[in-house]
Length: 200
Image 1 (cartoon, rainbow, N blue to C red):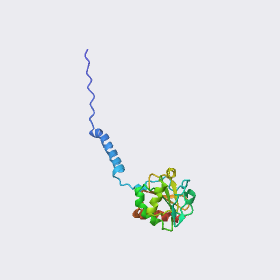
Image 2: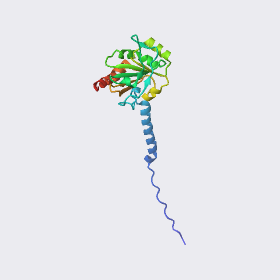
Image 3: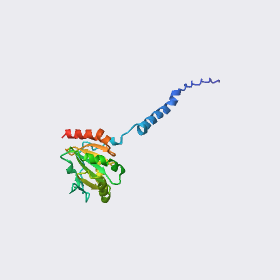
Image 4: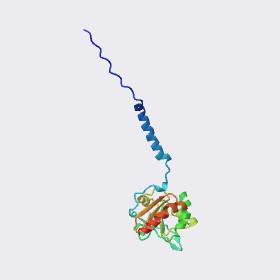
């Protein structure tokens, strides 16, 4: 009895592009990752805040003892103080080098009658904060001390300096991260101030 051998089924031809496909997909994903993480120009001041157009957090900060302006004691800062007019809230500290760099522009902003400039002194020693403002000038109409950093957490502060624009209705209109410069102020903060004033 003889058995007929069945012919071997034909081996499908290999498609070279199928072998290369995973490598191509990986290379494309790695390229996109590198672009967005490393190569794409980013502006740190434009990190979005979830608090935009929300009411300012509820807070009450004690004044920086011994701080004066025009011969009068400078008050502390509460959420209630941020209603009724457009206010710029600057979060700063004496140990922060970029805060020192941006201070001249804050002294100029303080002269602008359209806005009220106030400060939150973040995780600082009072005597160091007083010395800082004594050397560079006090542009703030009010300064609240946030030694433990709890109020800053509620404001969504990543680090200092950060600057918030609060509209007259007590809602946060804009957030600027990093030190303000004359160029940054003119290009970004000044247009937002005009918008906040217009919506009163």
